[in-house]
Image (cartoon, rainbow, N blue to C red; front, side, top):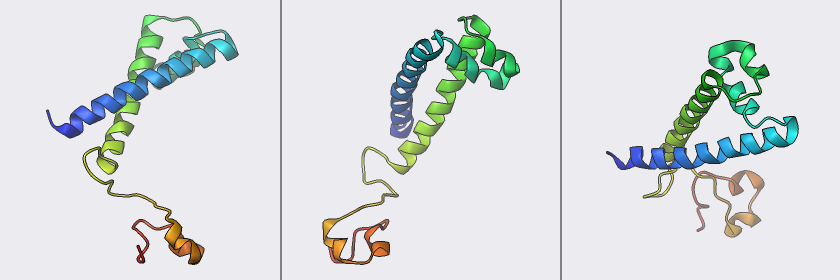
Length: 116
C-alpha cells in the first residue's frame, strides 16, 4: 500500500472519529439527541426524513456515519496530496518577518520572500 493511501486513511480515521464524537456531543447538548446530527447526514439517501430522526437506528445512523466517513476521508486524501508529511507542501502561504517592510501584496506569497 502506498504511503499516500496509508496517510489518507490515518488522517481520515482521526478526523472521522473526532467529528463524529463532536457531532454526538453537540447534538446531545443542543437537541438532546446524540444520534440526530449523525442521522441527518444520511439525508443524501433517505431525504428529509433523516433530518427528523433523533433515535439511533441502523438505516439512518450507519448510513450517516458511513457517508460522513467517506466525505472526510476524501478531504483527507486531498489534504495529503497538497500537504504531504514527507516533504514540503506543494502550496503554502508563508508570512515572513523579513517581508514586513514591503507592501502587503508581496508579503503574502506562495513562495518565500525573494530577500530571504
